[in-house]
Image (cartoon, rainbow, N blue to C red):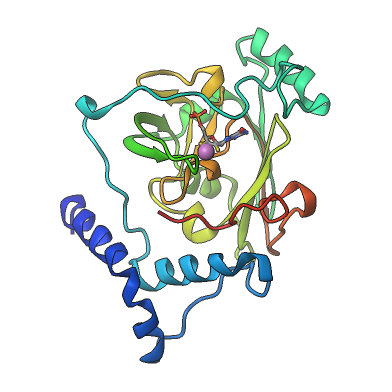
Length: 256
Ligand SMILES: Nc1nc2c(c(=O)[nH]1)N[C@H]1C(S)=C(S)[C@@H](COP(=O)(O)O)O[C@H]1N2
Ligand SMILES: [Mo]
């Protein structure tokens, strides 16, 4: 099946979300998200179960042509090194400022946890991995969307480079503005989940998450963390308490 076949299929399947109730009655056992049981997160159960039931693993989101690229605002944190920004995190802000002034030559992405070869990756190291370029739509929960081109290694390639161990179930991400979030392995290993260091054919701009950001094309824009600092491969799901999505009123799973 090539991409052309997959696209309408994914859309048709998502369009059929309304039939989920029927499916559950007919005896399919839905998978539960790791937030299952948290009363605040009932919506996660519905969207997660729906997507995991209805979509074939690795169903791709639509990719666009160059002519479809639009302008894209930089929102949320636009410079973690700027003490005037609301999410300024002194613990990492000063470091980010120094790294930015050095053109990110000294930036290192830590990859630790349940991996055979934990390590640190420079931008040059990331650029040595095979890369993927994709033109995709970013959808923000605030109600806007944009189309841009993103380039970088797939997270799957990075995880195989460090030798993810069989016990691994979640991948946690930490950023220079103090954000923390995670993905399960379905989204972490999705063929369009990449660590983008390029945007629209250039280096990723500061406002869009330099030197490298996540692109999680299967979920809403807020899952695509900018300004990556550290990746942790773990066995147990963590909601990160007051720092995580749940406490802040956002769904952990935001499939689109
Ligand atoms: N580290 C970090 N990542 C982040 C954010 C942020 O403020 N900090 N905002 C999120 C939200 S809500 C959106 S819509 C996108 C915005 O990406 P952009 O600034 O490239 O448009 O980044 C997401 N990732
Ligand atoms: Mo957003």
